[in-house]
Length: 334
Image (tube, rainbow, N blue to C red; front, side):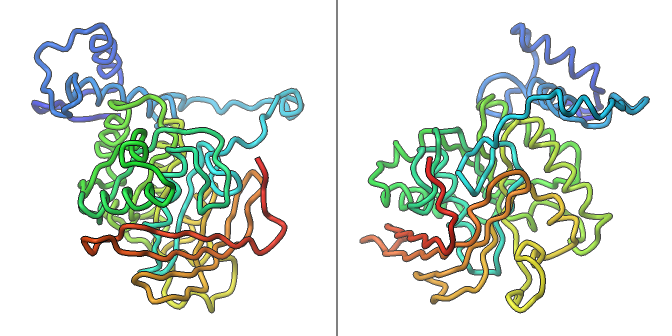
């Protein structure tokens, strides 16, 4: 693993470990304070390098594969699924939120983010066990748009802006390419600079976070691999907002298979929240059938999500009203 020094050149993982140790001991003299949160760029790059190496970056462990007798599996203690949002978002899961354009995908993602940060029910229906820190990477949204939506989602719960955002950090319109090692390190290091206990990292949208060709598996495989590495490095769920194909409701197969691009994208998902059968005006009123998928756990299954937006006095989205109608025996109690 290589990354650039702030002043040019590169360092390998061994150098990163040394810099991390030095920075941990307070020896940060001469490093540029570029993140605005204390410490220097080299410190956070090093910290990211260590985390990514621990998560399986490929720098070490390239010798013999470790084979164990299968009896080892039955001697292990596997915990029950741990949830950020019961039935929808497991802990430490790559979770896709997908739908056609203009179907309120970002609203759905932010609803989940606020629910997780405030330990309030998602969509008024799905239980959140405890509050967790949330990081938002909003490539399409301005700060004004992010403020309006977070304020509105909090207000619908009777929460003040301070209560809503106490555990939420954001970055609007950053330039990131998840095919590039340096950008992956930069993202991981930036999250670690603010917390070592992130519950959810929400990335919106996937199409603006890479330079690959979405329909080609070889091009998207590095992006999907890096999503899993980020999940492992931060030990958090990684939410990814992505588009479904237009007119996908007529496609065969499960809703997750209607996501745009190579099948490697759906194959990466530990969980999915897939919007389809859309109704509404696409401006202040949305109704979508939502299909949940969980690889290792009990999914919420299918439900209808209704979102109505009432503008505030300034003509901005001031009050979202969510209603989730469960369509099967999927109502999961705490």
